[in-house]
Image (cartoon, rainbow, N blue to C red; front, side):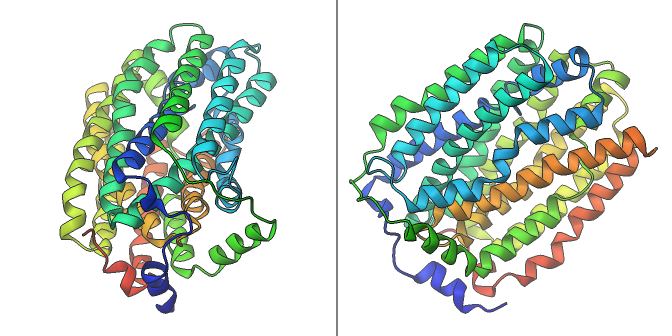
Length: 419
């Protein structure tokens, strides 16, 4: 792995978007609201328990069927790099971020409204949610690009990763119990709640994110973005490490079935279980904003990967409701440490000028691995005689494989810390 490209990444010319033109506090505020919109209003939070409850108890899908449905509805999330390339290459109405945020949020809000109106059958629900996810990805990519621009302009990748994670965890803290209670009502109420949440980003982006007008770009601008990303070796190395870390037979659907069928938990109880995990995540994010100034990125990655592997192993004892609450809270800390370090890495390894594309590539790797491997894990349980404990062991072992790969990153990248 050559180290020259890494030096070019972090010591080169500023991005042509000139993020410093927007005050950091304004950009950070819009990023936070963008994170709220794309976290709360998605099928993995406010719709998390209502949707899974609908699929399991109304449409009578097994674990594999549920995992497959969620994988397909989230298909646009795996194509985030394409969205990011377009956003970076072509200003929309003369704006590099603002217009994409406004248009994407409006489309996502409308998509959720339609989702609440379609018949709650497999095909129409799948199509409506897949289209809504596409609009959500547009918002997510623009938000991620703005986050990376702000982090690189102010030398605060670790701090902003902490703020992002704390905002994300706060969304789960509020949204998880609400999700549990929404599962007791018609799914249209869940869709309405998501539509309102994502619509809130429209006025925020319009007011707080003034941008200088940019001229239209030729089609060759897209080719420039793709060449820049293709040559970004540190970014590809970072993506490979994340893929190894996340790719293992998933337990998401298996846990949902275990909670309802074996632990006899209500949907309200399941919501509070997620609350416990993300309460720990908020505390971890706040600690990380200090650690990222004291420790190198290498140390943070190794600590995060190791801590997550240790806390994942606790799922071997997931046999009662009290144990589930304790384990989810502890694992919330371990997973947050790992995810924070990877977000920090993503922001630092992304080439300047290709912020949305580079960041989207990292996030799409994570999304594809998590949702894709959930199908594998569910299928092993449903059709191949595996036990839940076997999935836990494989997940733990696979996570540890990412540790030695950290040392393949350029030394200049591994040694970085926040200013």
